[in-house]
Image (cartoon, rainbow, N blue to C red; front, side, top):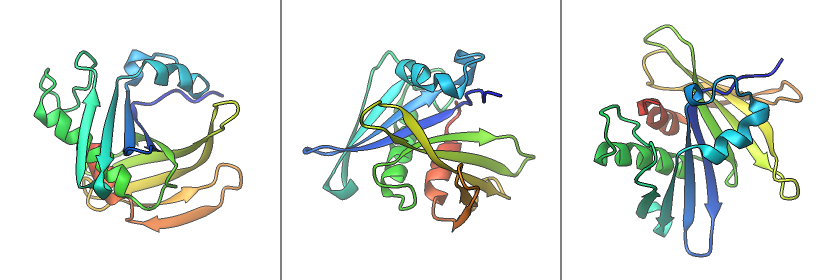
Length: 182
């Protein structure tokens, strides 16, 4: 059985000689009905994208995006400073977190939960340099009993089923993600 793509955010950290970049691609499942994770690369190719360029260990950053792309993540039918601030906060939280591998790629998405609880999964990927395919390294299963304060959880290895408890180390990343309205 194939797993359908969920609404969420795809994040990738890239080190360059000039700066560090965090690429965010906004995935809206409603725009890709019946697409499965096997078709994820196609969805990523067409997803709205922003890039945060980070210098000086996170002290300086600039956000680049196509002004015509749909990066409205704070619902007010316009792309404004609130959207830019929310996406910058998400990118910086990803940059500063210490749990997902430094060259890691993450796909964050919400799961159903009874309010005020929140559930977010983070699937961590590695990209093969030869075939350019994404391979899952595991899923961080996160939960918050009280609307995002704090998130705690564990990572499960997709091959072994082994669990690793990471506590609340991804809290800032998850709080920044749950502010987005995708």
